[in-house]
Image 1 (cartoon, helix red, strand yellow):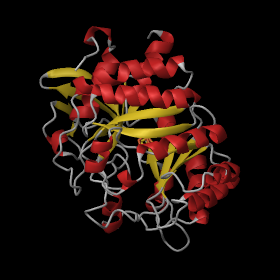
Image 2 (cartoon, helix red, strand yellow):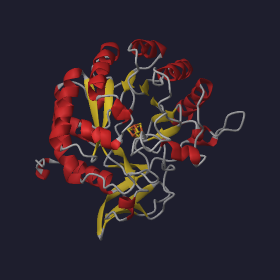
Image 3 (cartoon, helix red, strand yellow):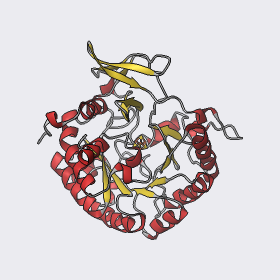
Image 4 (cartoon, protein in one colour):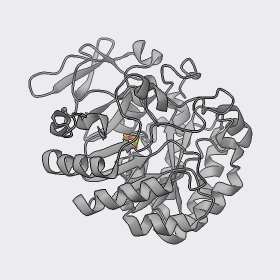
Length: 377
Ligand code: SF4
């Protein structure tokens, strides 16, 4: 593994990568906004602000329980001291519980079951909390917990456009939400969820005008990209999760039936509609792709105009990969710096993205390497 010289990392880059891979022990588990457990995408983590950046840090994983990093209970201003053994590392804070969590629909559904605050200013929802691949061990993605939050009664199976418009409006007014991420479990239709995402985007856009990212598998008919764009979707995520086809087959036996080549075709068609840098894909580091493989992926994707959002894998309770180790901080430090430089050189940074996970950027430290290459911080 070719490690990036640690001497060239800032204290902040070093510390963020430590926390995001090793996790954090909370002396007071109730500190800040409620942490996510289960659900789609990276989860079992909590938003933490340190040295001017907010990132998601695992707090419920097995690794977090033995992390050397410990947060003292926050004071009345929400500020806590981060320790590593006897050493005081720095002050950290936790974004507070958003005010819209206190509201409910007329029929009594709490707004927090419809959409959640992610990081500081991103509203995120899973429009369909069910997936054709989830119920069957032969097809489900091994890392996914989309059904766990539904089973636990922490969300509802399907969010309507009206519910989402009401929640987004309240979150914008009460909590200053600046963009919306909508993901979905994959339904048994060949639009792969694009139709419900378009319907919900239209309602949210008309109520709030907020920038919106939609996330789904590549649809059979690429005309859906134009339809989603016309409905108010500003950015699109289609998530490969892993680059190597063998890793994809092992980790997500159902979704890997859609080959990487088809994603690449879909990316090219989507970039033509949404623009360079406004289409992105998750790549979960730590599931088997090597540093070289992730760098090949990043090069190919950036050339296509797609932002490779490389995120350290978080082992989530209740999934088949709950005991799988996350990548080491050293692995992430080898992967991310060159990718940050390539993104900056291509003019496709987190700052230029209109909405979505690459805008929020809290599940990876990748954007801190963009800033370093752009302004030599
Ligand atoms: S990067 Fe995406 S999944 Fe992660 S906290 Fe932000 S919006 Fe949520």
